[in-house]
Image 1 (cartoon, rainbow, N blue to C red):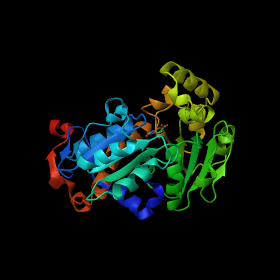
Image 2 (image 1 turned 90 degrees about the vertical axis):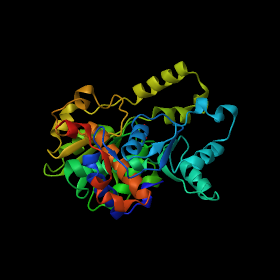
Image 3 (image 1 turned 120 degrees about the horizontal axis):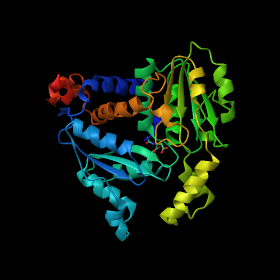
Image 4 (image 1 turned 120 degrees about the vertical axis):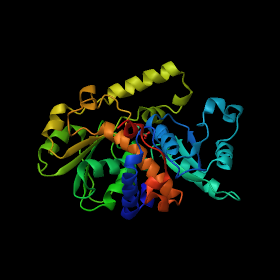
Length: 347
Ligand code: NCD
């Protein structure tokens, strides 16, 4: 439910098993580790990557999934309460992955399910409003470990919407679990980190100070430049509580207005000026902050956003098996391989 629930040892354990699963996460690969386990995606907010990697991890690990919840075709259209929707999903699925616009809604659903008789389903928080997105933080740590070699002694420059960006909030609980990391926030347009998430020795400067602070970093440092989109939908709801009732066209206009107002971009020159061992990450989706030139650059060793996306699959496979109590099987995944990755077959 929260990055705060993990110890650094828990995180390292997940990352180590995720790494073991790397050879089995290729296209076409299939293991039988999660055979008999069923996933239900319940996304009450849009998603591209998070839903895909959970379904894909289930497929690759040999599990099953029920059709992703869709509000328009579910009985919520008939006025069924959300609670009942979650309880229903828990009758047939073993793992519920939930994303919801209300902070702590997923915690409440987990409590509800825990209190049911004969229940064995468990819940993974895939984003509870502007609060947290712990599994994104896990895959970010995996990316940093792969790309920079460790999770200690890093400088994290966190840029963009720190007020509503939920992966950022999970990072504020996660990064300090490792040693000697420095976290510096650079909010855009005053969207600073809320007090409740501030770790010790956190520093914050306005986005326009980023180049100056970056130029003062010791070139021998390892840096994570963590960028985020402006969460226009949460700002829109704050400005106008009726926002969700508007038609699609009006909502799109509001989105464009807010994106224009908070528009920012990471200049290529800034990335070039940062130490050699810098990795640019983004949970995605990106807005104006990351140009195509940066996002699609195949030969810039500082850009790791597509790798980050790809690593998500093996990290999800890893925590599914660990949370399901199947750690034993992860010691020798080869034993559970039912189909080799297609690329390997071709070789
Ligand atoms: C993020 C989210 O939904 O919190 N995306 C993701 O899951 N990778 C970031 C965002 O919406 O901006």
